[in-house]
Length: 164
Image (cartoon, rainbow, N blue to C red):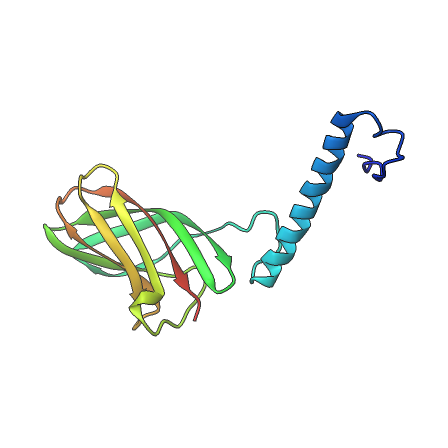
């Protein structure tokens, strides 16, 4: 693919052809946005790659009143903040307090529970939502909720945490 002709008002290719003028500036602006995006991505802790979304399979531990699994989740990092999303399957044993922990895609040394936050909701059980917070003792994501049904269910989750 050839580069667009350099712009100047005397350029005979662009003179009198506003559609070429618009195309030229659109290509130039898109190139500039790509370069700035890559520079900012690296400066803020990313890799500078076009697609910085990564996948991870969290391990679960500390299960209380349930069994749980996550097939695969995704995350991306901007500076010292990691954003995550995915879906886990949980099967409460009885109604009531239910909890488990998920490993982090990028390690952190949490000092406060507020350094991670998120939520999860069941797709098929009305009003079954979960809180996600930092577990300071184990440097994991703590998932906690009140089971309103003992059916095995999928829960979509999302949130973010601080790399400390």
